[in-house]
Image (cartoon, rainbow, N blue to C red):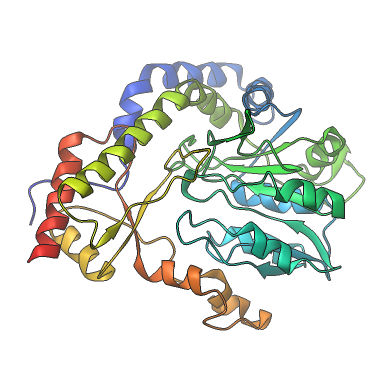
Length: 378
C-alpha cells in the first residue's frame, strides 16, 4: 500500500486556516441560543446580496431546495417545460420533476462542459416556462445573449450556481457574477463547495425584488405570519450556526478561489512539460470567464484504467458524471435515448476530476502528473 495519499479534497487543511475565527463565530451563536433565521442569517443574506450585486438573497436548507423554491416562486406547474443540461448533478433535473414540470435537455460544449446557448434556443416551445443554466465546475455559461432573449419571450432564467459562487464573466467592460444575472440564482453551501458550510445550506439570489416576499414565505411552509398560510410551501431554512460559519468563510473566499486558479494553471503547465497533451485535455477557460475551479476536470484516454492506476499510487480522483441525466432510469419516461446528446455522453465516458483545493501543494501536483506520465508511457 502507498505510504502517502492525496485526496480529491482536504477540508481539514482548510479548517486549520480559520479554526479560531470559526470557533468564535459558533460560540457567539451558542451564547445567543438563537438558532433559526436569526441575525446571522439576515447578515449573511445581506453580505451575499452585496457580493453579487443583487437586491434579494434568501437562505434555505440546501442547494436542491433553492432550485425547488425558485421554480415554486415562479409558479412552474405540471405541463410546463424547463430547459437545462443533461450533464449535471441530479438535483438540476429532479427539481423540475418535483414541481410536476418536464425537463428538456440541450447538449453541451465539449470544451467548457456547459450547455450550448444556441441549442437551448432551439428547444424553446410555447410550454417553456424557465431555463436553468448550470455554471458547471466553476465556470459561467455565457448568458449575455441568452438572458435578453428569454426576457423578451417571458421565460424565466434560473441560474444553478451550486458550483460557481465567486465565478465572474467580463462582457463589454462589465462584470457579470454567477447568480447575479438571471431572475433567480441557486447556491449550494454543501461542505465540498468553494464556499462550503459545515453541514447543509443553500441560498436563492434574485434580481427581482418582487420575488423576495414569496421566497421567504415558501421556505417556511408558505406562511407570512405564524400559523397563517397563504400557500403551501416547504420547510427549508438556513440555520444560524451555518450562517455564522459561512460569514467567516466568505471573507476568505476570493483568496481561496485565486489559490484554486493557481493550482489549475500549474496542472496545465505540468501536463505540457511532461508531454501529456497527446492523452490529456485540460479544462478550457472560455474567453471573458474567470473560472474558480470547483472541480478540475480533464478529458483523458483510458479514463477508467488511469483512475485505477492513480488509486493504486495513493491518488484519489472522481468521475463527474458517469451517466447523463437523460439516461437515468428514473427519467426513462421522458423518451430520451443514448445518442441524443453526443457531446454530454462523450464527456461522461472520458472525464476525470483531479484533486483541487486551495491548500494543494506543488509537490503533490508534481507527484500526480509524474504518476500519469508513468501510466501513459508504460
